[in-house]
Image (cartoon, rainbow, N blue to C red; front, side, top):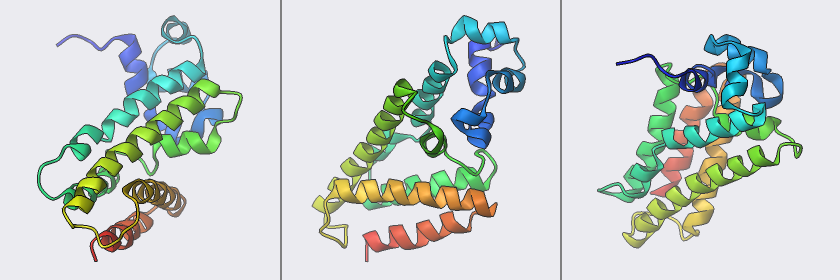
Length: 190
């Protein structure tokens, strides 16, 4: 197997910088230092920090395994629960810092970066849509304990997860995420 391209090296090695510092707090110098590439290489592949952030958002949303969530076999409510359990587990075992790129960028990006705002909006939309599809299947199968619209439930779960991630980051512990799993997901199937 060959060496990764400079572009892949930039993307693969900088997620932690984004999550730690946010969009406004991370400089191009910080990003290239983390990637171990010259600054000129950055501009050979990305015209701006915003374009680089959009690339990260578009790749990050794929790590959420949304296709598997929307099309999972078995009980749909179990697929929703498993989805969030896996997201928490990735933080528990160190594969992911206390943070979520979508939430981190959402809390730090301004209207001066419309392409990044649109990428974030679209990514949250994809996440909510995948959850809505699974929750609609769960409703149709009689697996839910509520009559709330699946789209409303999906949006509330994403918002709850993002809030728990933010609280976990501040606490430096997974307690808020564990609480999210125990309370929010339990309420779906009472």
